[in-house]
Image (cartoon, rainbow, N blue to C red; front, side, top):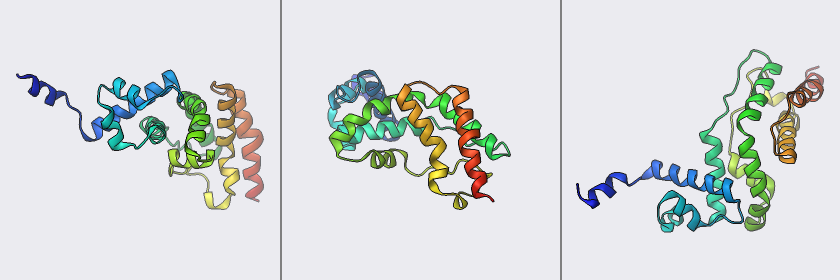
Length: 190
């Protein structure tokens, strides 16, 4: 087999190439941080040319947001159906706590640089990365509760993760569910 044939067999294309580029960007982001990440360093990690990156993302900011989004979507947290709202929330917060801590730590460390570089607000960056997600429980009608109540358990969890850079202890998850969220839900279901 000629060298050209070998290179063609190894060449990644389409979704396979994009996934490899985003994984390389995530690894570089997690290892060196936003400030030290460059398009060149990602290209080197992905074993490709920098032009390949620029054909997909016009700049480092867009690449980083795509890498964070890719990390989250390729490591999904299953939406539980335990038969109760409380059970669903415990299962979901536990799964998020167990699987999303690395994402939160890297995203938190990245936010300051990303916000300064893009001029976007934290809410705009979050919306761009998160997109639309399915509702997290079959046991509740999301139209019957204020959006602030529905997002509160996740907002509190995210805040704790950002402040400590560690998974939440079980007693904190219990407090979020039993002391805060469930009483609010009960108040609106009267």
